[in-house]
Every structure is written in C-alpha cells, then in structure tokens.
Length: 275
View 1 (cartoon, rainbow, N blue to C red):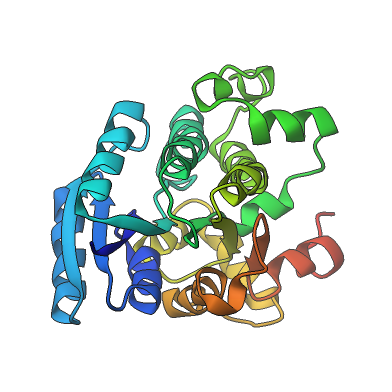
View 2: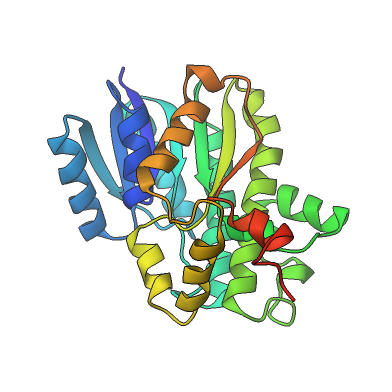
C-alpha cells in the first residue's frame, strides 16, 4: 500500500515542502481551486513525483472528511502539510478566522484520527502570531483545546473584539501554534508528531499581494530593518519542514519554529519596536 503525503494548499510553500519529504511516496494535492491544483500537479509530476489532486474547502468539515477518505483510499497517511490560508490584504476578519483558525483546527482534528504511527505533519503559521500581545492562560487554553466546531463562538473572537484583518490574522496564527501544541498530545498517542512553522516574509504570490497592498510599505520596512535584510524563499521553509518531518526530527513535536530573518526580534527589541 502506498505511503501518502497530503499537501493542503498547493502554493509555493506547500510544493517546496512536498519536494523535500515526498520522494517515493504518493502526493495528494488539495486546494480550493482547480487551477492551483493543475499547476502544482504539473510541476511535481514533471519532477518525478506520483501525484493526484482533490478539491477541498478547509472551512467545511464535510469537505475535509471527504479528503481524509480520499487519502486513506490511496494508502497509509504518513505526512500532512497544511499550508492553506488567506492574508490580511485578501480577506475580511471573519473570513480569516474561518479559514486560518477554524480550517486549521478542522484539518488537525480530522487527520489526527488517521495519521499513521511514525507519521508527522507541519502547519504553516506566521511571524504575525509572535507579534500579538500576551493572552491570558484561559484564552490560550480556549484557542488550543476548544472543539473546532465551537471555536468561532468564543467571546474573544467576536466582531466587537476582532475588528480588523491584521488582528484576525495575528490571533489565528497564534491560535495555530497553540492548537498544534495541544494536538501534539493526541497525535502522540498514535505515535505521530505535529509542529508549526512561523515564516516571515517569504516570496510567494501571497506575499507579493501584501507587498503591493496597503501594508506594503510596512512590509518593506520589516525587510530592511531585519537582521537578514531580505525576504525568505519557499525552499528555506522546505528545509525546516524536512527536519521536522524527517528522521532527524523525531524528538520534536508540539513546537513552533519562527523563521523570519529576525523581524520579530527587531519588533520586540530593535528598530521595528512600536513607539
């Protein structure tokens, strides 16, 4: 029976990770848009990977469960790469919370029921989660452990509390890392691991939308004043994911890896610090 790696969100980062961890395995690409799937499948297929595709809406439990059934019909699920999401420039606060926060919780719940012993996964969060102020212990626990279908009803996520897309994005990405920490306990009972990666500005189509959008000046300033002085590449995220999902990362689970060229360091302790 084939070993299966599922890539949810068939963009640049998901593809870069898949190239690093999927040799000899079947890659199931899942995305909301067929054109994204077709483009990614061609790239990976031309590179020698065995690929199939499926439409998925991460905001629908029925759709995510159908993806689980599609994947398990192919083979044993040994890898999950969850890279689907929307950015502050692309969507409203409600949509960001639904896709980035609720959608991730759904994926973790559903695939955590079927991940094979020895399997592993990564969720792509964001440096933005590290720039949200401290939450209370009660809020942390609520974001981490509230059942997915009750998550968006939390008082802290209501429209009078989350009023702009950036705040929605920050709390969603903080929620992703907290949720993965909690899910690592459950996945561990199956002998599997799950971690988050929180990238900074990685040059993807989504990042270019941000750089050309209303917050573009701020993002260019972040790059200029960071220790690295540049944006990152999808392949650099792929390298970290390969460690986390591979044999050298078997002692790592429930962790969040910030890789942002030093932007967050500059935000809290350097020239990007709020005045």
